Length: 506
Image 1 (cartoon, rainbow, N blue to C red):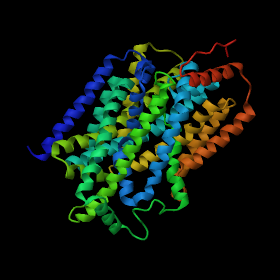
Image 2 (image 1 turned 30 degrees about the vertical axis):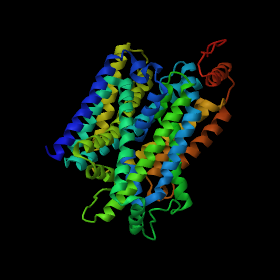
Image 3 (image 1 turned 30 degrees about the horizontal axis):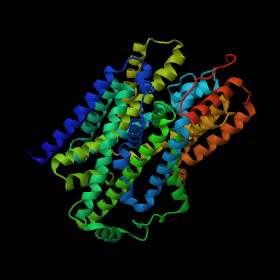
Image 4 (image 1 turned 180 degrees about the horizontal axis):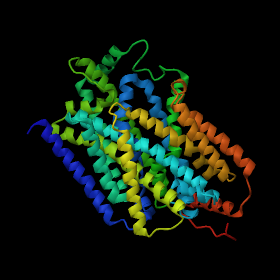
């Protein structure tokens, strides 16, 4: 058998396994709570691996190594900021969000939490949040489709469009049937595959470039006065702050937050944090090491060319391993892409059904009808994302960066204020959310502005300022909100949730 046949066998095994998990999850999905949140029964390990795999996406194995390959260690500020942001998210947001979503009318989406927590009877807050989710997740899902197309281009010399449609099609299928349960358990398998691949490539690679000394010597050989590949502090302070600011985005990513909401209890967040951050640190270091080894390897082998820096991990995998092993390593890249797409499709679907359809239609569908509507939502978002992804020149990192900033700036401050500040009001949340989202759109589409600072920074700051100022002007004391807030705090302290008892309805 030739190399391509071995790789195709590995890919078919992987695809079949993902579809099998989707079918298994389909049998366990009976209502919208199962379809969107797995009945709040996720163990810490499952939640941690699922959050990590759905978080990192093709960005971890394509976008990040590509950035390191071009810019060297200075791009590491992105990884540093993300690791710190993820730890803070698990430490402070995860336990309180798990408790608050249960005590606040069993909220199963981020927009529904905002509405229930702030007693917004106009539904404007929930609808606004739902629209923001649909807009930015469409770009995010599209980035995964682009990564899938690039993957098949590099791995199998196939057409970009064919690869993009194949990745999108399989992911949509198992998400369509399996819902949140399917997306979560495929994430676990995919998270393990990503972890092993990011360990294997650097370990084998370092033996191919003359060890650590040989790698460093070759990397220094391609460094210039403008770009010192081994200098973490080679850029400006503003550039470092801008890159590290990616970490701010964690507080507002619905596909990550929903994993916290699905934990069995607030107390599970401790074990989840330890597992999740350990996985992340090893994975990010693996991506960095793969890129640096790639720089050294291609410098030592000038007869080889790398036409796209974002494909460095893919190329090294095929050079270093037996075709069958390379096939499974390549499947890990596909796993990173597909895990994120599936998670984002579920959240987008929940925004369409739970946060828009129910509010606009003003009626409650049957459990089975709600699941059907959820699946229709998955299809709608998928089609739009595929249309955006038809452009093969789109950058995975650029698409992810734009969507990440959008969620971080629009939702991050509101999530934090909702969980930690009693005086946040619905008008304040609406005004802040809109201010953050609009700032990202304007700033991110201006070359002059985005070239100076990543758009999440001004969007995040403006959101906080606007939300606090407007809330202080519109705040009215509510005994029920205070009771609910205190119940959530107590749930975090004890590790278990007790539903609050209100003196009167509001």
